[in-house]
Each structure stands twice: as C-alpha cells, then as structure tokens.
Image 1 (cartoon, helix red, strand yellow):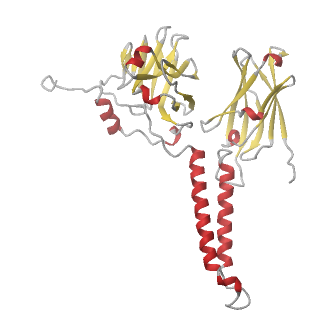
Image 2 (cartoon, rainbow, N blue to C red; image 1 turned 120 degrees about the vertical axis):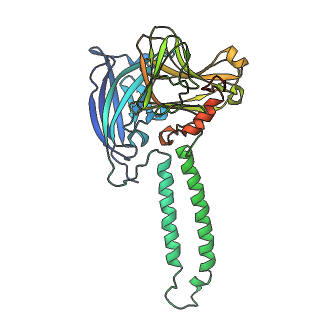
Image 3 (tube, rainbow, N blue to C red; image 1 turned 135 degrees about the vertical axis):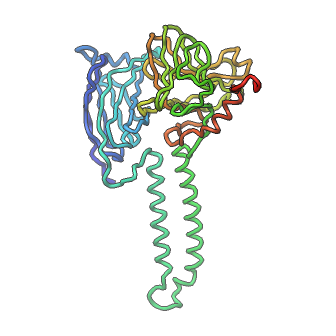
Length: 381
C-alpha cells in the first residue's frame, strides 16, 4: 500500500516552569502519522541525553482522560526524544497538556515543563474512536454488516430462471453465513467491551461521592485527628470541609497528614490488579493502576495531585486486622489543599469513574450505618 506522509513536530520543552508553550494542531482520529521530536533545555543549554535512561510522556486530554505514552513508540537518543503518537492521545477534541518525565539509571525522576497542542474535531466520523484497540474492531463490524447486506442481495432470484443453480442452495448458504456473522458480531462486541474495560465496575469505597456525602455527625467542618464525614478519618492536623459540590482537605501543620478510609478483607485483594481514580472539583480525573502485593505490608505506587499523594497502604498492624487504607496524604507544607468531587477504587486495569451515575444516597447511608449509627434521643441510645 501507499505510505502516508508523516508530520513531524519539533518541540522544545524547558525544565524550569514558565508559560506553557502552544505547539501545534492535529486532527482527531488521524492514525500513526504524527511524530514529536522533543529537545529539552535547562536554562540556556540543552540537557545531556546520555544521562536519560528512559522517558515517558503524559497527555492530559480535554475531557479529563490521562494517557501515558506507549514505550514501543518512544525513543531517547543523543538527538533528543522521539515519539510517534497513536490515536489515544488525540481521541478527544480540545487542548491537550503534555508533560515529559525523565528517568535516570538509578530511577531518579525529573518532570520537565509542559507543552500544549490542540486536537481539532474529526469531520469524517462524528463518533470519536477513543482508543487504538477499538479502531479495528469498529472497522470489522462495519465490514460484517456490509457482507450481510451483500448476502441478502445475493438471495434475490438471479437472471435466467427459477431453476438457476445459484438459487438452489441460497437459503442454506444465507442461513450459514448469517449465523457466522452473528458469531463474529458477538465476538467483536466482547472485544469492544474489553477495550472499554467493560461498562461498570463496583466502587470498593464507601461514601465516595463528595457532591452529596453521608454526614451523620452533621458538621460542616472536621479538624483532625478524628472522624470526618462517614467512613473517612483524618490523621494529623488537617481540616475537611464540605463545600457545594465537593469536599476539601487542608493541612494545618506540616507532618504526615492522612485523609483515609479503611477497607476490609485485605487478603482477598492479594495479587489482584486494582485501579484507583480521583476526580477533583475542576472535573479532572487522575487514575493509577496498581498490582496489589501478595503478602505483608502494602505501599503501592502513587498519583500526585498538587502537594497531595494518593495510594493504597497497610502497616503490619493493618495486615493483622485484615484491612488496608485508601489514603490521601501530604507531608510537604501547611495550607496544602485538595478539592475532591468523587473517588473510586475498583478491580481491573481501567477507570470507569467517568461514566458512573451519582452515588445512591440511601445505599451509601446503609453502608455507613454499619460503622456509625446516630441515635437522636437518650432513650434510643
């Protein structure tokens, strides 16, 4: 076939933070044609790429999705970093903010300044194809439907006569082909669901929707250490405040401040793949997929949001009690704030938070009442 011309964009990213440069425009759904050639400067001179053993690029899309670069399409050489974009990075129209993480041989990490580009809506296919694995699936579905249409056309009585040989087994053939197409269709639908990561995964956390949280103690603000809204606990000198549509947690003093929830049955999660997601008040969704350890203490890799870090954690004492924590923590500075709209912990490799309906308040209230019941009279107590 014909080789398409690739477009190469030259980008210079600065390690020191400053205004984010706007670099280029691309068209949604264009496939494997955009190459980024990135040089990185520190002050007024280029960095030494021999010190970089690997790199990743993180793309934050306009709809809140975060896409990591595919290792097979990224290379580091003495001339800089080259990356061939796939379809995931340009799946959604609007501004994309990208940042580059550099890793040294000892695992040290440096995040450079960011750069931005814009994705223009694809006029050819209004329905956005949002990941590379779905693209061929949808093409195959289209081909199957076209074949089915052709089979139905072939059933019509051909020229000649009713005795024409072509007609004699047409009914049998169409039945067989139709069954085969239906089987293919079912298989593609299964692949499609797998590419989406399925439609819904249960949220393992309780009282996860801070737009309307269960708050049996009735306070608008909680300062730790102690309990906050139901099922959430503050460790250290921090304050959790219920706002209109979100909950904010602020550190009041520098120490290890945790805002956490304990989850039962730790041992049932050994070796499982889990994804946790945090939606902040500005609508951004941050996600991380982790493999749970198979024994002992737990300290998984983290999402960083501003000065806050989010991960799963369990001490030896937690392990003996068969629980682990979903925790937000900060030890960087006082007055560090994180604004939380929704959080989710689920089995599997993808976040399904974006499509979840609001939490069912009655259901969440019953879950919370198992841990804390508010009796309003002395007699009831």
